Image (cartoon, rainbow, N blue to C red; front, side, top):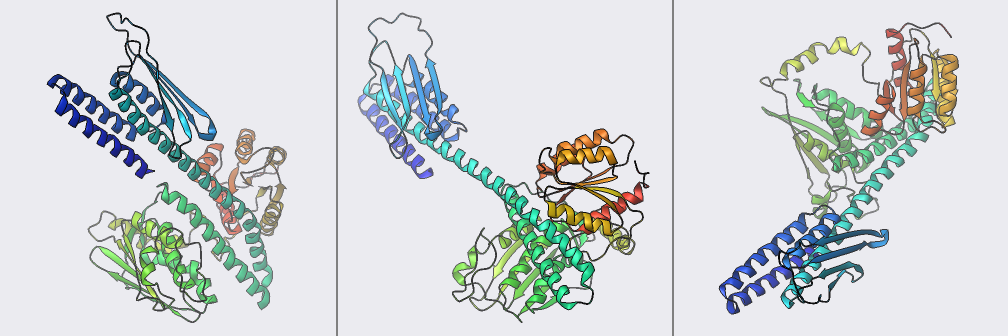
Length: 560
């Protein structure tokens, strides 16, 4: 695309040079001045075409400029844009001259606009009553038309790429939603297995396997969505002062089941002193999880993984080394490219989607850090080194860090405002049961969640579409509603608005439980009246914790 545009510009520039040379050798001074002015105008047109954002701008500019450049009375431009048959039609008419021009009208100058493959793109028609167009004017018009045609085709290609990128984003969002829906009843089933497993080792192992693999699927889905956000700079960091040890605990918790499954030996060398970071703890933990997961996937069973932390006056260097398959020299520069995977030229097939390391590096860079890969070659293991700025005593956030340390013991005993993660192994004691309405068109998801909430002492009703949910709410006035967004008959947004309108003096906790997790989805759920927006799959413990918190803040109301 760019090469063709540059080729056209080069041709015009060559033509400009030839015309300038002829003008200088054969024309009087007045003609040289006229030619120079025309060439400057032609150069401006080329620049304007190259920076145009829309086809209509090119078409209009082409017509307007040729009116003056070729002294035309009228310029008509018709462009037919591919299979979409989108027509752009521009007409330019020169201002009426002060003197009446005599003589018969000359034949219009017709110039065919073509795409690179020769297929028609449109037509350019110049008309003038005074005299036929000179060969010089025809040549200039043809050259400008060629540059315009290339620019129009380039803009069409850019539009097509942009549309394809938007379709890709919509596909990923839909894919994540569709994958999260079946994961929800699986997570609920794991929670039920946890209750009945008891001392039965076979059931306990089955439960652990399902839990571990479900968590891995959730991470893959989240990575897919985050890749789209990162590449479009739509991922926002929620920074706070945290202890590095806490971030590591989140990452280790995520990969611990895989380490146990493969019987790997993990060694962590970390200074005893408290190391403060001003970061988004969830996103940094995600980056570390991806690095550790990469080490686990490419290290054979019974291998070693070493995590070493080194500190300087203003930075933290983290090194994750493994005894895995290593990185061949020819692949070392490509491991951070999207969808890149390491081949060891043996029996092992590349693991994963090839997005974990690319996403990890981008997340580290967003925190002001760097990330590099090192390996002595195939079969020699690998080391990933990342450096992050640290919070020091002179930092404005240091006092906040000290407060975090001081409040650690008391804060851990209280219910966090942030929903509990899927792996949290505790239930919050229930103060009083709530009347809860669960709404989901996935019957397995709705029924399994209802069963779990009933076992915790709640009175639960179930609805499988938005209209039924609104009717149930009007009849029973439950104190909490856990509702999907993509519902038949009436979607979750409209159902939530209807419930808020019918709420009256009743207390109502509205929780969106959905597979849609984009920023726009969260904004819409907040506008519709939801108190919380949870992305599937979510542990029943998280919903239980929110209900307990609601119980603590709002005493149970009498049944309607």
